Image 1 (cartoon, rainbow, N blue to C red):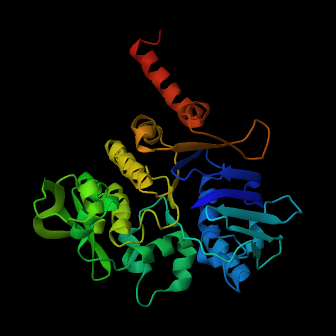
Image 2: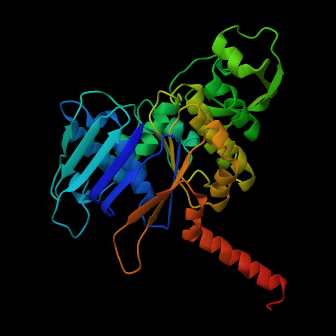
Amino acid sequence: MITQLQLQNFTAFTELTIDFSPGINIIIGENGTGKTQLLKAVLAMSGVDVRGVHAGEQLALKLSRLYHPLSGQVGELRRAGTRSDAQLSATFISGLNISAKFNGSAKVAKVSSNLTGETSPAIFIPTKEVLSLVRGLTAERPDVPTIERIFDDGYLVLAHQLVKQGANDLDSKVQLNPRFAAIVPRLANLIGGQYLLDDGRFVFEQGHYVEKDAASRSKANHAQMYQDNTEWKFVPISKQRLSSGMTAEGFRKIGVLQRLLSNGSLNPGSTGPLLWDEPESNLNPKLMKNLVQALLELARNAQQVILATHDYALLKWFDLLMDKGKGDHVTFHRLYRNQGEARIQCEASSDYSIVSRSAISNTFAELYDADVKRALGGV
């Protein structure tokens, strides 16, 4: 779990410090304020690439593959117009602090750490869905140079996480583990089925989870605490399976989260932060409420979530569904520039009113006013 990220002279950032909540963190801001760049910085600094004997080389390569600088060298990621080094520093809940710096001509970063302990790698879900791309990205004999030119490392790492083999009996995991009991059935019922790995590609099995009395449920204490005398069972409604490419892209985005939970790549309480760039992209607005409920449930099970969004509906559902009685904590981080300044700044608050100072809220209000004006005949 990351607690703080500091960036200096890195990409779009002159100097930025952001403190993360252990629960839900939502990054908002206009285009060009560095939301995706910030998520990728968290991904790079929480990975295995920042540890070990060759940490400087590995981190430089990771940053280059995530940001795709034209020269292919990490030095190009130093903010244009400065002579000072680019610096990144990440602090984790364990007390571990990792710092890196490099100059404008660097091919390798200088990495230092205050502890020798490990961090749990972050899980990054990019804007575009990945399920339909998995077969090509994880092929036995891929054209690696071509793939790396088209896709940044966020897509490649996620593809390999998705094909990871986990426990085959997902239904048993749902019964015994509170982290799955409320989340996996919700996701499956939301999209009307589940995505399964079949011969290196993903297929969609139509069906839904049903809840019934659990006469034979586990007697384990932790299971009894969360099952509340019920159990879940996935019921297919057809033997025919569909190629993932034949399903809606919004469903495939939900399917990514479902798959990560199913195979253990995302294991609340033990994995690093879940980073999600624009989860609303290509998602039907009516799915937003259930997605937010699933993310809140993940956070209730000790999963740190950091997402970037432009979507008013997604933001408002977090505001409406957050339940402090269940320990929910949502922090909004607004990235912005003052008029006439190039420097990106950040303000954070757990109060939803911070959204009213963003372009998202202003644009929604402008649209509403225009609609009312038309309804009144332009009066």
